[in-house]
Length: 308
Image (cartoon, rainbow, N blue to C red):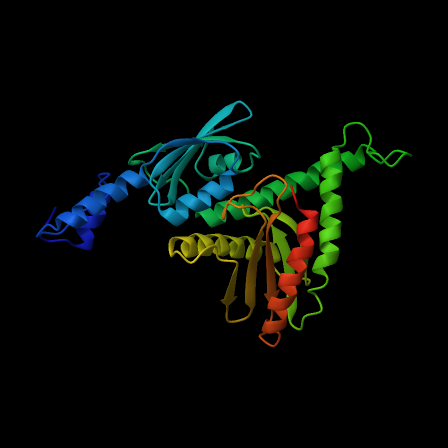
């Protein structure tokens, strides 16, 4: 407590691991609320079946202070957060951004949330969104390298049409889904001012995209996906239900992100149910009404390709 609260005091106490300070005269209801908020922010738990990118976005949106202990392929790493911002990460010999990216690449991690204040120097230079973008880029590069390696080794389909030994039927199925979805995205390309469209998982994983040459659709799409997820959480907290669509009106483009979730949980995917996000970018505002109508129709068709 202090009778002389200043930005300098706030900076000094943060360096000592203090979560909050209150001005005098003391407001006891405010004190109680601060205590309970701090306890909520320090909640601990053990999670399975959720992707790390999704959880990172939740921690950032809720400004949580905690440590994530991530187990993947027999290895254990940790990511440290303060008020939703990543401070540091450790994974074997890796530290900082490199350690965080190594954990983001894991497809099926087991995650433990450890609550409490975190007192560590900042070693991560990127924000959560920047980490996710870089993680997706690295994952895409690795996937292209694996496909190239399979092609170089002469991996082709057999005379019966089945993939040869060593080639995943899951990957070939995923590619077929992407091709079918890409054809549906072409229905949006006729909208005046079309710059690109893409389909993402709620975690920000790109499923398929169709872009005008030179447009940075991958980066824009991941960030729009993040905006949609945060808007959905906010609309639920407002008591208005799950938000379905966001429209970002920028200086040089209009960006739309629309959710289709066939499950009953407003934010999680469920087996056998489609849960996808469709992002559309327009260069001008001449066809906004048409864009919204077409997105509603196209995303319903896309659901057929991405029920899991």
